[in-house]
Length: 222
Image (cartoon, rainbow, N blue to C red; front, side):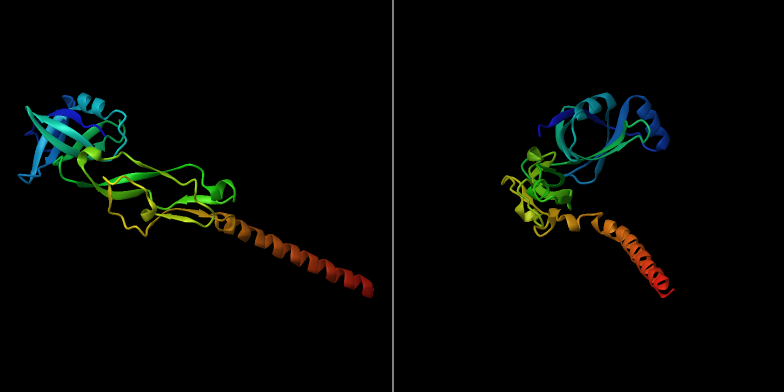
């Protein structure tokens, strides 16, 4: 993922009122967790520039270069708060990183392809795990992992240990955790509910047949 550069500057505005006035000027309040010095530095950045830089970005952890008055600071966007009604950013948190040291990030998993057990066996594909944690250099952070499940057959499970990822990614999530499973039709969600729903009908039918037989015997005795 290519890094992006955003101008930012230190801010002194704090408190609800001061931050609201800051936003009205077209600036977004934020903070940067410092790696070398420690602590947190308060910053502000132009809302328009930030939104343009984030356009088309879907990842949760995005590498940016903060231009702090001519000093370039590589950082990861860790948290973004948006206005509930407008959807516009109202606060952003960064953490400073070293481009030569790996960081731990969470990456979403997307299943691609039609599982063999679904296509041929009529099974149901169920995604068990939707994210995994990895250690990776900031410049190599992926927005997502596409995982091919086309070879997955009925009653087969794909585990984290089955992932075929590039060597630059170190998977931290436990390998024995299931990612996806193809369940047989009888085990699929709704199958049991359907069977339970049919049971009262069977019982009702049995009672009706028994009652009919009893009436027939009474007629014969007459």
